[in-house]
Image 1 (cartoon, rainbow, N blue to C red):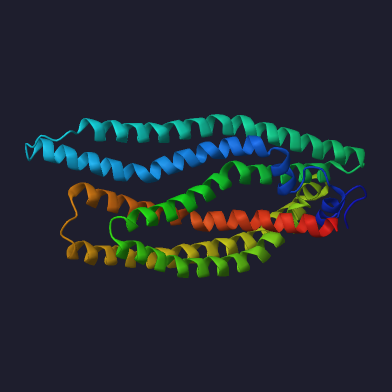
Image 2: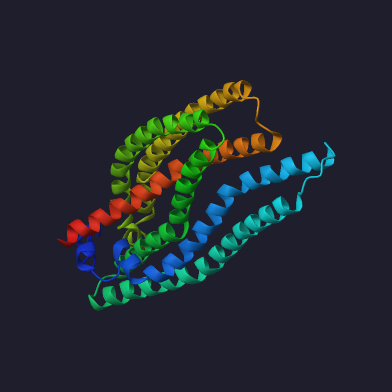
Length: 307
């Protein structure tokens, strides 16, 4: 039985209308969020194009100091340094404004949630549960959304860059993306139910701590182990299959590199950098899918209950 003054997760979601869904938060703070994301995009774009210009600098230096040719390496050096500093500037400003903007958003959202809940006369346990729900949205906006942007820019940016070196390498990467997308869709369908289970249990957390016996508290937390373990299992399977698929890119690049004679040292460096960028971007996929699935489940729940 839920004590008087508390509600189920779904019921209090239906009651709360102000700045609760992630859509409401984004609409209210869209300009602040766009400011932070613009620096994230600047950082990522500069990072993606940097290997190309470092490769050009590398070729210029090799021709200058090893072939003793009269090559102007100052311009390639300045261009690469400018792009590198753009990346640094984007990363610095992203981190600076991110802390200020999202701290303010959470303060505003949590205040609205708590004040509204107190006016409705909800128990302390319910108020804490609502504040935690708001925090999960802020964590998604602050941490996961930049990772989503990085995932997209790194994956497709690397593919586009590889196309200018050898279309076969780019085509190989595109082919690998198709099964990765299928695997991630299977992952999402299986994890969404588990996330719903976790969210159902989380609503009772403060009530259990406040009123439960040691045995009840122990049982409550151990009941959350199973869905978390299943999510971890699906995450590991997702990671394993993707990494095995990416092995074929390595093999394909090896054969293509042997077949092509005009790859200079700088071009080879750039190609390897873009391949590693493409592969590294996939490391985020399981965690991102889990976080996105959790937020989407919460958003769907809130909207359905509000109808």
